[in-house]
Length: 228
Image (cartoon, rainbow, N blue to C red):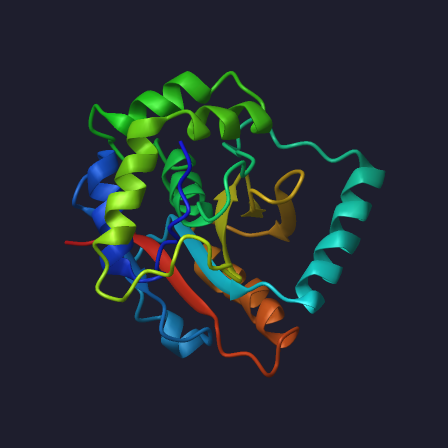
């Protein structure tokens, strides 16, 4: 099933998709309006995941190639308790970022029976490539993604128009901060963090992304949090 519609990086669209996937209304994406400590203090807690939207550029691709080379030299593998999938289809990185956010927090999010819960259960024993292929073949999940993207307020780009933005997810697992990017060979361990400091430590990595593109304003950050 070919899906070519990109998702907007705004909470309304993302939450529409999460609802279709069976995420309880208690858990929602919210905007992170700034990456400094004072701005981060306004974000509801606990933060379960952070998603960054950033522009794809020659600078980034060079950085990614160098990072991949270092990972391959180390023989880095995805930690067993991190749910990580490879991106197979183009323009579904928004869906993958949301799946990464929820699938790595099922101990806190009581998923309703349905699309995402079934996918996670079916994918648990698969490697990252297998998880990505299973998502590609999950027609209902991708249809829900398409519907959420299509119903956004802004005009959706034509299907043959290239999309030059990408989503990645940051999570806390076993005392470490992981970057989950379906275009990379494995999760990136960015060092120590805690559940309480996930947002602050992820914000530091987001600032590094921005520093590599000082003339680009195409960045956006959202967080998965409880809404009372």
